[in-house]
Length: 264
Image (cartoon, rainbow, N blue to C red):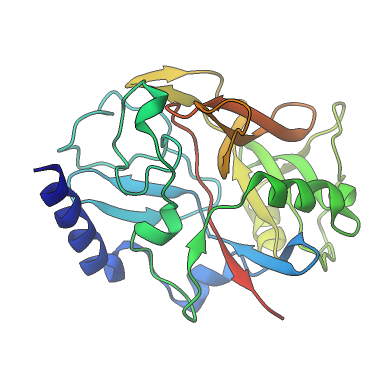
């Protein structure tokens, strides 16, 4: 019975993939900037966080980079017609897995299994922790290519592409600045976004069907398990000081942001 359900989920997801995320150039162009995640690999980010609709088994990206859904009292309802965006680690084949047992989680990349439309045949995937580390601390000028920011009232992490040139009329103070956080209205954010900037909004975590943690922190799953703690996986944590690697039980629900590999 479980195999039949899994097959039906995959068929429904793939068949409906053309409806899940607009793949026109305007939508994809929102995140046109290229980001080095290793000495030989560049990526571009999806135009928003991953979202899932339990009642239809469809996935999509948030319409805006600032958009978050967070915890809802309907988590756990397989017939829920709204959208959710807090996922257990690697739950591409079972996005509504709410088990609080970390042993129930085996990594399946959301970008590969969720039937999301591709652009130019490039498959979406999740960054590893090593790739996040390279992007934030090892790529050329790394420390000057991210910042803490409020965008239209949403707190989060602002990522700047490799070839960043700040547009006229906007100022970005980069790096982990405890005493200074950039603030942008929608007009200024539009200039940053057009220049290739990416924004990772903060949101709570989820444990089972209950809310957990602060909405003032970023929690983004990576594709990396914790080699020293089998029941945990690594995620990108952004607090009021600096983005860094952290580890948590695999059953916790967190945000997911995908990338495509790009070649200049």
